[in-house]
Image (cartoon, rainbow, N blue to C red; front, side, top):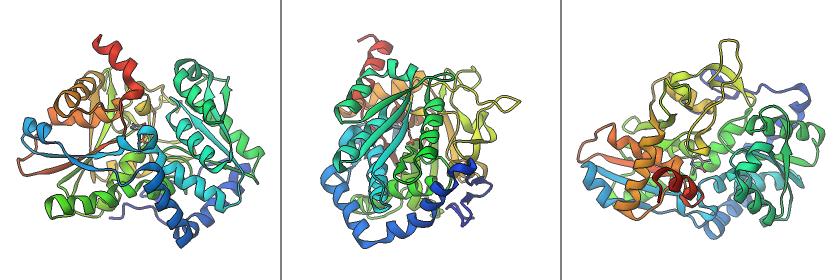
Length: 393
Ligand SMILES: *Cc1c(COP(=O)(O)O)cnc(C)c1O
């Protein structure tokens, strides 16, 4: 079984590029060039240098001793929370801004929901001195004032999307419209392992530095490269794709994908796509998608802004369908408690997204000598108000 993208841009039956005709030249230019550009030694060199000196990589692989004792297994945390800007998203935006520069683009656009991807994009645009326009739903702009302020401080223009539900999908539509109108000088930085081919594969490759590092770091700690389990939360699926990448074809490594169950998978307020999703097209690719009987996208819900997405990337749809990955759904309550537990046991305040991945230890038991590597995708600073509201500190 192949779990990587094939020549046509598919993972099994998922993926592809379902785009309006007018967008074809933009996506095609990227498709024809992305692998070539990424293979250039000068690209590699600049990417690796920035990951090291600007992002702060390699991120540590930390043996969580007290957490391991509690669950009677060996738990390692991959510390993406220690990256510049506080999460894994910067790995992708660094890669894409270098790609944009190599393709001669001078203007960057992005869509953002909670604002995390907008901030990561505005950051690299400031770094490279490129114009940055971030589309964001009007409702989200009101809800996410600190991230809007961050983007503005970093020099980006934040443009409100005023149509529809005035949230992420409307921002995405505006970004696509912009790209159609500015095909020559503009690159669209998509923020997860989603979108039309080649985006899911390109984003996965940029994020694959996570599993590349895990291999040599685990070798240092344990004398072997492969853990027994790799675990990551899934919104669109970019931190997960990066965490799994170098283990996809290693049969002795089990893969666990953690989705947000919100108030419960059957509550009508959830984002558990692997359980509730059906095949459909979202953001230019065929994948699993939460939708009504007549194909309208269902509004997802999770306490975590980063997991509040109605689909999963096509690679994950394939991992789900083939059974290569085990999918688990974690409720808001279980995630919040797991997040607080990490604070108390390890002195680390995790992003609520990452807390979902940590919550699996209450649901599933592991053997004492199992090595379980969990992607700690981000830090909890951005979620402080949510933690305060939930626990009443
Ligand atoms: C955005 C985000 C996620 C979800 O995005 P993926 O593309 O699924 O990785 C997870 N964790 C954190 C901290 C995030 O900011």
